[in-house]
Image (cartoon, rainbow, N blue to C red; front, side, top):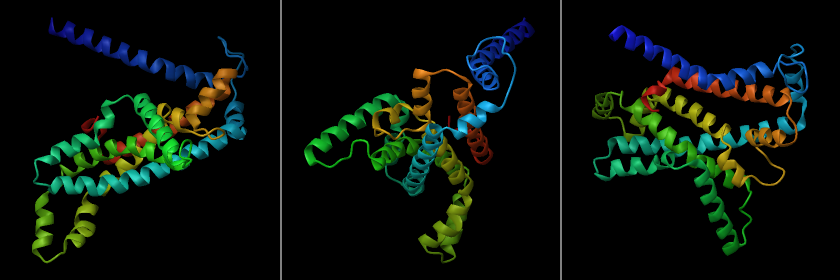
Length: 267
């Protein structure tokens, strides 16, 4: 009976993974179709759609815009999260746990709700001050920072949990100043976590679409939005090729991040 239950569980697990991966497999397969209008079975296979994807100005510009926003969000997110998590680790206050919950709170709120709230706030701020903030690059970047901070905090806290605090205490007892201990002991010990947090933050920002839909300015689109807009008017393997390139970039970032900090510890 136990063997039958294990077999059934394995079958259901395999079926679940197959159900989740089937759309991804189909998108990858479709990106190699030679016919412009996708249908089964395809006439043949080609790599021309990948060349077309990178030569189209819309996708190339949106890719660079997404890259720029993701780099800004990653840098600012790390600048906030690294000192915050180190301070929280050494905090003796009862508020430390509440602060951690506050920093990770965006994870429990749907991204589209956050995007709508930020947009309404920016509109009200612009009406009150006459500052052109709606659709600005820095507003979009700061909004993406809001999404990167929770993941940075979780990854860094998971990494700091494995650091032996006696090493820092030993450095301090030998005369090292707090700054020297931070830069010569603590940061080198958690450097793998910092790298993983940066890579994961980049992935979260680069692939975000819900938040960006509310905050991008006319004429400036991120890559996920460019894909969505392209699908409104045309469906050919070009968009599949762009999607595969985006999936490959995100998957590479996640695999590298998992190399430094096991993502199963934080997700």
